[in-house]
Image (cartoon, rainbow over all chains, first blue to last red; front, side):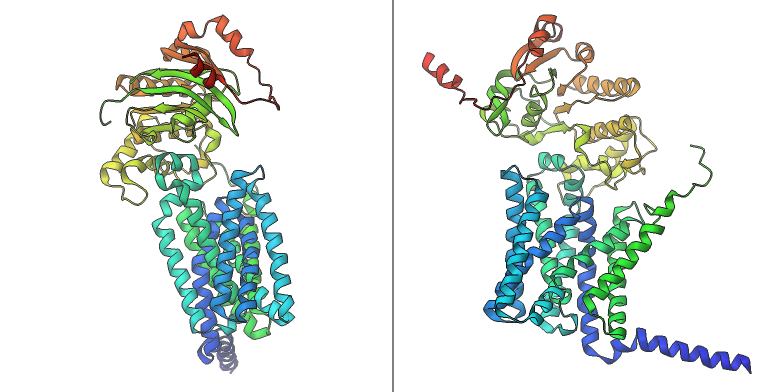
Length: 304
Length: 255
């Protein structure tokens, strides 16, 4: 008798879980689109984040994400809420700021971080001013935080295209990128392409930020790039594993964020980033390759 | 090694940053197969000269003639601090990057290249550490790894920037053994050294630099007490009002 009741209860619970975790994606097309689009973004952005961290450029990604804003805003002013216009504007603005920062740190006495900070603060101010001059605060929120449930065909194709291009470029330039991060002088000394590698890398970062801002918004897109990467670095010393792990963590966070957002009505971008934040904090404590618990009194030491 | 190495000629070479010379009007020739030590006080322009020889720095004046060879046909050992030792890469992969000139950025590491890597690691005495991440190595072990990469690079000109700084005696001896082998193979070795005794022992030729060349020649003669005193007197002062150097114009008027 009790066994049967427990069984019914189990079935009920299972159905409830299915309803929360699976049904939304079966029932609603906009959920499927949101999932596919942000998965594409997760899989290509997170490995870039791993390299950003290794190159000590974690904040550069943040700065570049702000730099995309005025370009998108100008696109918005010219063509309204049109994806191609805003994307193109954001892309141009991001690349200009990336190049200007590189040039400023090379030809002036300011270091790269100072130039980045300067450029992105100006960009952000410019972007917010431009958007609010013409549009409503709803538009501004849309640009800042994205609308992952509003992904149309062209947006999906762009996300998939950027993701594919990023992964292929990373695979082709993997050796160059590794050596440039590890020992840039060596790369410059032994290869003609050495000087180009940092620009190719920054170009990919900008591309992913621009692709991300439609889905998550400019401010949240960088979170999906950095947080899973930081979490992955806390679990492994092996670069190839860290890259795959970061992509996996990002994909999981996208899914968890979408489910949470669908259940509670919370905005999706922040929900995804909060999920990533949760994984990051758990990794900070339990991470086997850098977490806090690693500091507990070690097991008996080895012989040699 | 490919064809017989050509000599490297420094013609009225001036190097520096922001128009400020770090090496001033240097003239000389590094013969093929030479073993040249570059000594001098801090700030004398030794590392700057090495960077220029490696093709990493464009001269402010004068030129470096390599007899048709490219600057990329030199293997350059940077100071230890210039390598990011926290990067997650193991010893084998790090040493294998030395094959870059042959396999390029995109080519495949074939069995011969992998064998070369393994052999280089064994020759610097690190056999068995292939799978260790480089951030677990001591300073001396890391220097051995960098030498293994030089072995894999297999270039006819080898440039070493402070190869024995902060390295214990045993490691120094082993690495000096490699330098001796390179000399026996007819390669050109140029090394920035702070340890004058090492220069006297292992390098027949020395350039004593204090921005201006103080002496260039047989090591014991170049490192005599009088020359060393002159090098020490080098002014490190940074003259804000420094005027344009007119030495080249004066020289051309004299002819």
